[in-house]
Length: 233
Length: 233
DNA sequence: CTCTAAAATTAGTCGTGCCTAAAATTACCG
DNA sequence: CGGTAATTTTAGGCACGACTAATTTTAGAG
Ligand SMILES: [Mn+2]
Ligand SMILES: [Mn+2]
Ligand SMILES: [Mn+2]
Ligand SMILES: [Mn+2]
Image (cartoon, each protein chain N blue to C red):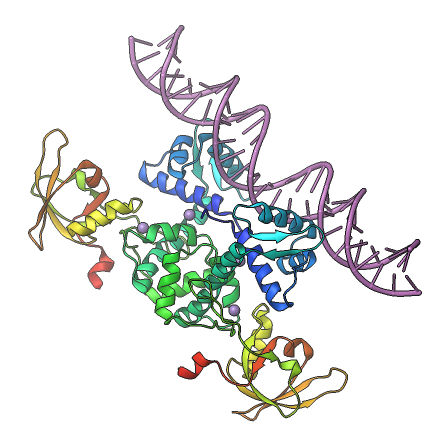
């Protein structure tokens, strides 16, 4: 298993993540270009390359997008494991805040050794979710698919726990942190403005109420119960 | 200050290290090629590039080698600071042994943020030497030049402390560790074989005596006293 | 001082990963 | 269906950092 470039690893990771987000189908060239911040033409080139590699990492059909092969998925999961373990480690061991970890992890994920991975996993007690609530794949590449629905879909009067938050926008994370909307916090939907208006959310513990815009609620996933793992702590 | 590639950083680091080892002069193309494991022609190309950069990072004269400019030296010292702090961190915080840290640090040194650097430095109490006895530059790029002479030059009957060890060969480091020849250990030269023969060295603490070949003694630096910092611990 | 071996540079290529502009294909609307 | 707009691919190029082979320059032995 020769060493893959950071670029290749990032493409595989992005394909995996988009596959997970938008149903099952193939991932489009544009979606990848958007996510990775590169030109569409660049994506086409890389997909051809990934699909020609031995072992083949993506199945790619001209004009019809791409899909990870088992080999490609394995690598994507390894990189994602690195990323999420590193995020945990930066918070636990080095005192980073949850809005700072993503950027650092995005570079470190490509250069740490398996040794490093194992040592921080041990040190952390083998966590199964990262600081934003995303599941951490096992060493062998198993990921538990987490339950949960977008906060946007919660009906007025329903209560739930914050179980996942998108980690790409540090400003959003800082904002949520300020409001006390952190992982595993229990909330209730109080009111929903008309015409896709703000969602009024109450924190059960503090009784504070906040009006959240669509931009915010779209990036929060909630679930009926806290994660199994969390319960044990 | 745009971001420099790992390649550029490694060249600057290598030039700095060779400058330090072999007197003051300019660093030859071959010496660099050897150290970096690349073809001579590649070095010529890179030196031209480094010397054409704004700000200029090396002074380079065709057929007469290269020398770091102050700007280049500053960057080299930053990378070396990263490298050595990471080595310390891997040992202290993650339980690596002194033969494992170099390889990992060689990749990490290029991707960690200043944030990361500061946090591990704090966590470690701002150490001034790395696990092999090499000095760690300050944030502002100051390095203390350390005293010490090659073990090879010690005369029979002389006693000294092991103060530095070359960190490039893991096998050598494991060997030394086995013999108890670790940093700050006090030793005495018992006997020197003829014709550059083995050096017989006694560990003061355990009274054990070991015969060391030239390959080994060339890579150990000793000094009359332990480092100031070490004394305080 | 001259000659030659070693050191270094030039010339020409390659793979990677990105870009823009132009052409092809698809998908969707009337 | 046909036509057009959006999507995607092709074509052509560029920067980077490596390589090999050929050539130039230096330095040192005699
Ligand atoms: Mn990444
Ligand atoms: Mn995350
Ligand atoms: Mn390096
Ligand atoms: Mn070291």
